[in-house]
Length: 262
Image (cartoon, rainbow, N blue to C red):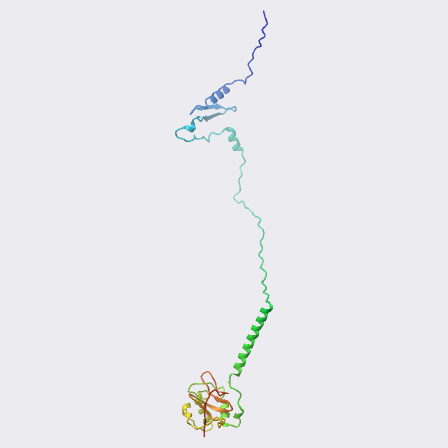
């Protein structure tokens, strides 16, 4: 009897087969079958129901994806959710923010520096304004009559007339409360007992006409529409017009008529 040199073959060791293993293997083979539901028993002993997705689902006539049953969670997933930490905030929670303090500062005042030319012009304007004010005040203070001429002294007519300087002009006035031109001359001569006509045009013929060279202080001076009293030299005294007063002033008429009364 000869010895056989052929070595015996042995099956490789396999994982022990159990009913659960056979069931899982059968379920995996059936995954490609559309619409079939397979029950798989997990090692933990739980039964998991799975819906197999057919391989030709993308080409189905409806063109929609199969729905997923979210309620079918695994036990391990449920355990993770149940053990997840829960974060909650109290209803009276207050949040604080550290904000920087902002301060508003006033801008520095603007200083205007005048150049020598501008300062000089400002000074000139101020000086001019002062001069104008002074001149105006002087004019107002000297506006009333000119100085009383020396011819008044010893002349009864001019002495009476000089006492009425400053009396306001009043149209139709014949008293020291107010005079018009002829009312003034009539009043002055009346104080000396001489009666003159009331109007200037009538007084023009109340006496004798004399030349300017022959005229004496106290004579009447007539010009169309106005009558005055000659005060000697180039002066006269009269009640000029509304807004003015009785005053001594320079003769302004170019060719007045001189009239001597008496």
